Length: 114
Length: 115
Image (cartoon, rainbow over all chains, first blue to last red):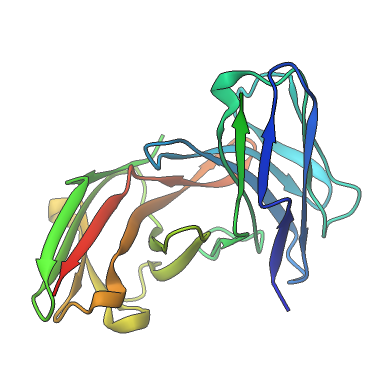
């Protein structure tokens, strides 16, 4: 079974559209994250949720709205997509314990905004 | 805030040669440090982590890293490169802010292995 699964794997859309990416983990972790990886492979945290509660929001535009219906799921909705949103988005999960934040990553969603 | 700097965006070695990927950290407190590997079209996976138990940390696939406080370094090494080691490698540090823990990644180093 895949530990962290996200869908879809590829997403191609037009500017101005709204899209969602779903993520689920079956590891029993309390904390889930969204990371954005740009074309130069730079990886930056966007959000972190602990047990359904938002704990980190890294000054991401409010067009991005994460939602965590339960601690095993963290979805990302993006409104009014812009060209600069094109990137690979990774979901990850970890135990909530400093020094033990081994991140388990999904395989990524490649978003292309045309 | 804590950060890591990876020296060299690309490293190329011959198969069987030593792999050395460099990482320096900046931290005001004892850091938790990590190395992750990303194969093409995949998510990152943990190679190894340093949590102050031992300065020499052994990871998967024959990789190891040594924590050197005096040099603020955490370089990744492997004695003999294999073709399958070709990937992107990320050094990372755990940072605790007001909102909780987060992992801060370096810019990555792409490892090429020549036959």
